[in-house]
Structures are given as C-alpha cells and as structure tokens.
Length: 279
Length: 314
Image 1 (cartoon, rainbow over the protein chains, first blue to last red):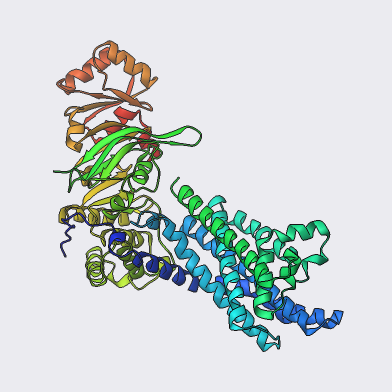
Image 2 (image 1 turned 90 degrees about the vertical axis):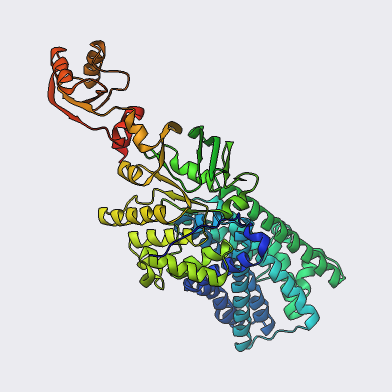
C-alpha cells in the first residue's frame, strides 16, 4: 500500500501562485456539466427560432407587412433568447446547491465571487453561440441584416452587457429562492413579460402611453434598440426612447443604461451569493 | 508545536435564536485523530461548517494550522479538506474529473495531481471506477472517492463529517478500515464527527462529547470510560427508574454518576464488590426484572453525560 505523507511546509494560498487557474478550472467544470445537460443548450433556442422562422413570416403574410418586419422580429427575438438562456443557466446554480458539488467549491481556497464569474463566463459563451445560431438561421430563412463593422459594435456591446446583467438577475434569484420549482415559476415574469413591452414585436410607441414610459426604463428596450441599430441600421427604437436627433448620442446613452444594469446586477449577484452561500 | 486546530469559544446562533453551538473550545495536535461525538442536532456539523468557513460563526475564533478562519479564510481553506456528511459531488462527472478539479482548485500541479490521484485511488480501491460518472457509484464507492478527493491536496487538516452515516454495515466496516488506514499511514490531522460510539472508540485519539451545542467531556476514550470505574451494575427495574435511582442514592448505593435510560438504572460500582452491591439493592426494596454487571463503554459515558439522547438518535 502506498504511503501518504502530508505537506511539511505551510503552503501558500493557491491564488498567490496563479489567479486565473482556478477560474479556468471552474469554467471547464461548468461547461462539462452544461454539455451533459442538452436542455441548457437547446430549450432556450426553441421559442426565438419559432418566432424568427415561423411566426414572423406568418404575421407578414397575414398582415401584409414588409420583409423589414421579419427582420424587426428576428432581431427582437434576441431579446427573448438572452433572458431565457441566462435564466436557464441559473438552474445550474440551484442544482449545484441542492445536489451538486457547491459545498466542496465553497471549501476551496478561492474567492467565492469566482464561482459566480465562472458561471457567468459559461452562460455568456452559450448565449453568444445561441445568438450566432439564431442569426444564422434567420439569414438562411432569407432575412437581411444591414450592418457595418462600426455599427455592429453597438449590438455586440449591448448584447454582451445585457447578457451579463440578466445572468446577474438569474444568479440573484437562484440565491434567494429555496427550491427549483419556485425559481422556474418566476422565470416567465422576469424573462418573458418584459419582452412583450420592450419593443420586440412592435415599436414601444404603439403601446398605451403609460406603458411607453414604462418601456423606456426597461434595460431590454435599450438593448433591443441598440441591437436593431447595430444589425439593421434602424435607429427608430433609439428615437422612440430618447426623442433626440443625434444617433450616436442616443446609442451612447442607451449603452450606458445597459452598462449600469449589468454592473449593478452583477454586484448584487456576487454580494447575495457571498452572503447566502455561507449561512 | 503549533496546534493543527484551535477553537476558542466558538458560537453559532441561527435566525430564530436557534443556538446550534454555544461556546465550544478545544485544540487538536498535528497528526491527532480527534472526534466530535454527539447525537443529531448536537452541533457537530455546524462546527465543521464553521471550521471549513462554509458557515459564518456568530462569535469566537478558530485557527487551522495557524491560520485564522475569519481573517485568513483562503489560507485556512488551502490547508484543509472536508468530506461532507451528504454527497457533495457532480453526479454526471467522472471520479477522475473530481480528483482533478479538487487538485486544481487547491493548487496542486498537474503531474503531481495525477500521480497523487492514482496513488490514492489505488489505496482506496477505486482505480477501476475513476472513469465512470459518479451517478453510477454505490454509496460506499462514492464515499471513498470523496475521501480520495479530499486527500489529493495533501491537507494538513481533514474534516470527516459523519463519513459512514447511511451506509450499510458491510460498506461501513470497509470504510472504517479505510479511515483507520489513513490514521496509521498519514500525519494529517483528522477531525471526525460521528454519533456511532464504536466508530469513535476505534478511530479517535481523543474525543469531545458535544451535547446541545456544548462540549460536556473531552479526553481519550480510555480516560472517559475510566471515570465510570471498572464495572457497572445495570438494573432493569419494574417500577419507575428515576424513583428506583432515588432510592439507591438515598441508601448510598448510587452516586451522582449513576443514570437511567428508560427502565434501566446504571450504577458505576467503583470500589464496591458486585455481590455486595446486588445484595444491597435487594435489601433497599428496589423491584428488579434483571441485574447484570459489565464493563463501561463509551455509550455509558455519553448516556451518563447527556441523559440518553444518543441511543435514541442512533
């Protein structure tokens, strides 16, 4: 039998040697768990693809709208895909807590915020992949995107920040609710209801005026307006929000809103995770 | 020599004023196997949770290998590992992946981690299981994997929180052999919680008996038993056991260390001869169904200290 001997010298905390190694390890673990859970990859895609490929063309046919409406809805479905995917990713946090290895990770010599960041990295990567699939499918269906290298940056920044913010919401909710059933019950209110109010299927000015005002404060409205500006060269969403003429200024202001949303919810998620995980 | 574990007046009060741990203190020397013995709800797992920094203490201090768990939590965690009471695994990942994950998070280099993992898997008899997902492991196999995982990082302090709870007797016996082997072959300090007395007696150098969040006795198993003398008189009484005990005390047959559990009165004999004691019981008018004598066990120590809750919990 092999003899086992302990370290005789006091080891340095692992972070002092390599701060990124543990993060990469946690990211790899989450990716492996996600890869073994196909629902995390496939389910969030179903509804947006259904909208982009079937419902939008059907609406165009039935209501005699233009091909621009298909593009309008296709980009609008990105605003459904991101919340759905990030909220589904939050289920992984609950599984970790209820039947996974979370306590082992909490006992590891790493800052606990790293667990949140690792989950965020994976949720972000999967969301990016799904958005790519959605845009690819939409293009294959004949939907035309009109973008430039400069303008697409607005879309990329908005989608990235909105994904980060929504993941923060998912992580926060997962930390606050005691059971998976309760979490799932709250997903529609967080991921789907705002989508109907944020200018995804129609301009927010088509809403009753009090709802238009409400829509203007939704981060999703700003993210969608930036998405359409970036992918379709359509700044009408930004004008509906800000009522200004300078498109760059409006885009900058909307990006600031999404940035604040992302930063605030990430900070809240880390704080609440740190507090609830060790009680 | 610096203590491997030092606990000073550690307190944990949960919301609702539930006092799980009420000011416990103890120290464990390097290489020692220290047991926290007590029934469910005594505060054992909460104590382990605080020492592994997964539960925040309400007050008090603790150090692992000299690192303060509150001021230097990363350093304290880097020198310790834990095997939790319940399964704490990713069921869809393989055993090998669990070993790698722990090694990387605890900063063990790749080659060393692989070598160490292979050694431990061989020692614990799980080499053939390593490439299977954890969901295919039996309870005992999973426990051995969790122990191997905890040892990959060469911990100075290993926490084993009720490692055999819920296992069938055969697997439990195998796992006790494994833990006894660790004790013999490593200099790692082990803090073991259990409510199985045989387990504590077999594995631990010293024991703290914890009851309702307080340590009520702390010594070697032998010394704890010694307090009850060489022989015990055990009476199964036909009347109320507490009344019988009072009669025995009034007649000077039982001291403060005698105790009752159900219809049984247990009286440490100390220097009294067994035959004399039996005669005196009969003369005192206590109606008995049976009278036996035997050597004290840790069961008796615990029951005497805590009023019989351990037997009910186990």
